Length: 83
Image (tube, rainbow, N blue to C red):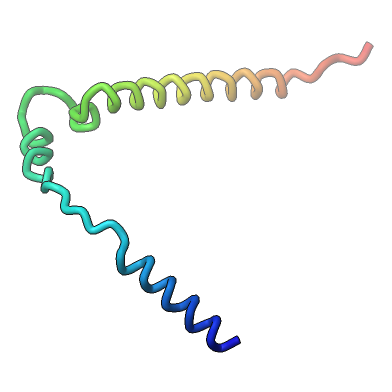
């Protein structure tokens, strides 16, 4: 039992310690330059098309959710008449 636990421990350590050690180039200075550039674009849209799509999707969901909530509130405030 103890031997199998020690073997498992060695395998786990070997797997973790030999994980991918690739070197990535530092893109932080490029991103800083992009986001600090004074070009009139709001900072939440400076990331490109992906940021614009996320922003629009968020706005659509927010406005749609607000409208749906108001509709449900109006429906709930006028109960059906039983007749």
